[in-house]
Image (cartoon, rainbow, N blue to C red; front, side):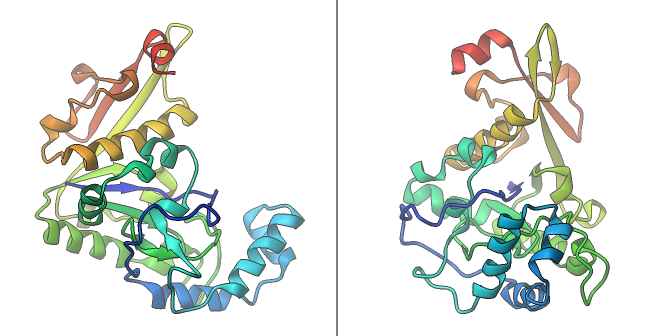
Length: 263
């Protein structure tokens, strides 16, 4: 199977990478096209566009101006190690073995507003450009228009190359909107994670994001190949609930007791 995850706003380019393995992204020419247009924006423009403080606006304008090709290990870092945040806390790629990194290159993909679709070890430079940003560009009114069918076609190519017939969507709604499900040449599954709070089960963003990372790591480290194997996911107290699942959605729940035990 091929698994999709979202990127993260928080980045870490200071901590040395745990591996020298790296690759180049497939869509850097598209990224460069976006960067050229972003460089025309003032800090005030970026602040309004991305709803950022003056300080963060200045930082990201500088990032756009510093962005340059070619990427190497001196000016860039592998995406899966550069992104931080709840999903990546769960993923914990710093603990991957060489075999895990190799497997993840074929079976894990990261959606990105700037880079389109990344393999875990594809090098990236610092940026902030969420997929839902309404950045009018030469291809249309937003990034969904900019990427069009490029990301979907790339997913299909990776599915075929890895012999996968299942696409596991562990990305946020904002990012998965860049994918055209009707054009995907695979069975599409979306895991949902619910935690108990005051006797009721619901999706709690912080826990759900981390659970997506935990499941992505579980798939990579256990070389999960079937839906039946995926349903055996039981990390951090989560349990598959067949009665609340269907052909498109897999529901996993965690009780308050299991949450406490997982801490």
